[in-house]
Amino acid sequence: MNSSIYLTLGLLALMFGAGLSSASWGFKLGREALKGITQPDTRPTNNLTGAQGNLNRREELVFLKEGKIISNVKNIIINGGVVEENTAKEDSQDKLGKTKSNQTTQTKQTFPIISSDAGVVLEVNNVRRWGNSLVLDVNLKNQGDRAVRFLYSFLNITDEQGRLLSASTEDLPGELPPNTRRYYGIITIPVTLLNNAKELSLELTDYPDQKLNLKISKIKID
Image (cartoon, rainbow, N blue to C red; front, side, top):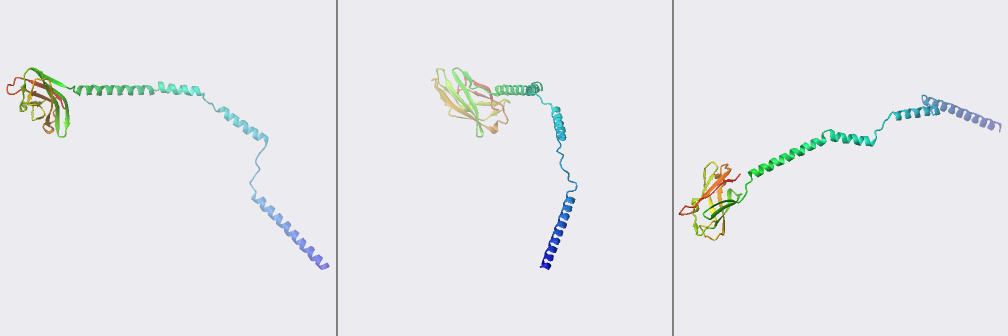
């Protein structure tokens, strides 16, 4: 019994010593690991100082009034040339549009173009492009008291430079009775013969007397 008690006590002493040594060693390791780490400064005086610093920084910020900002923007828009620039652009566009309109008015031809002699009326109603040909839509009307005959090989067509152009006719009557009825037809000219011509003139007379002089000039074809 005495030997058992001594052995037990010895073991307990060894265990206590080992535990104490382990605790001391762990405390030492932890202290070494925490070197250089300090507790945050939470003193009330520091907080007050920081708050005052923030207040001072906020007091330095100056906010503009909304009305003043809007007023400045309006002044910039009105006086800064934006409105003037837009107005100048609109004026220039209007002038350009008027110029184009004037040019269109100058180059556009008014139809019908009419020539009459001794009660016989020749009208050119339109000029158009049809395939490789230039087509003149025309009509004839006899307001006289006698019939008139035409031979369309006597139809004379020239350009503004006086060059004679070959043409063919369709649906125009060989004899025009005195009934005031309009007889419609076309005059066809090959485009290859025009050679950059800008205007045409046509002249038609009756057959065989050749007393009529139906003449229309300055028919724009460009």
